[in-house]
Amino acid sequence: MEKLRLGLIGCGGRAGAHMNSFLQMDDVAVVAVADPREDRRNAAAAKFGCTRIYTDHRDLYAHENRSTLDAVVIAIEPTAHIGVEETAIDLGLPFIVEKPMAMDIRQAEAIARRVEETGLITSVGFQDRYLDLIDIIKEELPRHKAGGLVYGAWVGGIPGVWWWQKKSTCGGQLVEQNIHLLDGLRWLYGEPLSVYATCSRGIVRPGIDASEEYDTDDHSTAVLRFPNNVTATLVSGCYSRGVRPNCGYVITLDDMILDYRLRNNLIIRTAHETRDIDRQVDQTFILDRVFLDAVRSGDGSAIRSPYPDAYKTLKLGFAANESMESGQVIYF
Image 1 (cartoon, rainbow, N blue to C red):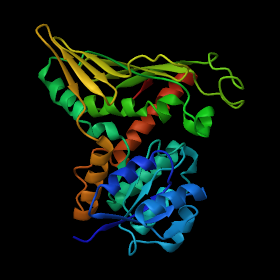
Image 2 (image 1 turned 60 degrees about the horizontal axis):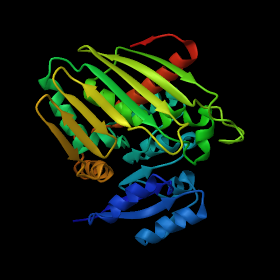
Image 3 (image 1 turned 120 degrees about the vertical axis):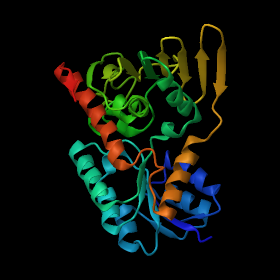
Image 4 (image 1 turned 60 degrees about the vertical axis):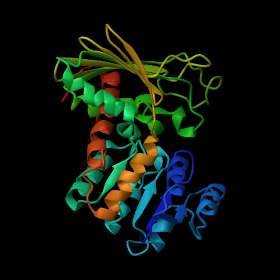
């Protein structure tokens, strides 16, 4: 079988998980890499024996096209999405892009529209949609009268990447990090009816606990209403050091509690039994495999988060931010 030829745009943090996937695949060849940092692009190239090494996406696109690449993987900083996806569309290159896909919702909307118009195969890195534990929850929910109450949380410390320090460059924790659980709510319950959110600052001290530029939210709470009498409360916090609460979802059904521990295990409780199910899959590997199979076949129907769908999650995150600022409920 002829190998699919991939280009990597961004060779840092999250790109590493995708590279680990590709190293396990016999039908994939990473043939081009691009990153502004010489050490990262050279390290990525060495993993795959790649000799086409570029300084950034512009350099890569100037030398590569649909005749030399079958797809690109975009894993870059939130503020770096300047012509990256648009040029991939111009060249007809299918792409995976990591979240958050943009800091400008109008840009994301325009990209989503072009993807739909062209039929280009795309995938966004909402990896939890491919988790076996989430599959179990999604299969279980329709068996009950109503989805009931959902409590979700992602609470921890401040990640050590520069864009986290300012809300303008990360979108806040809900958009940058907890967007995975936000997207999971859409995957499980469909489109929301409304969102109301609040936030607080003052725990993290700029210049002491974080950089001088730190101005993002220390914590926020979003209340989302969904059809079928479902109300979800989603908590985000980046002020915790040392001891952290369980992150994930606790879903209270009429006769069952689903306690999902983020990417680790799922505890199912009823009046008669308790089951503890461990995660068995590498969700990023599955995401990558589904995307590459779609590129090979031309059929993207198995992709669980194509760009136009992922845009709706990003839009929901920014709607929550708007509610934090205005104090108003945002209706859809």
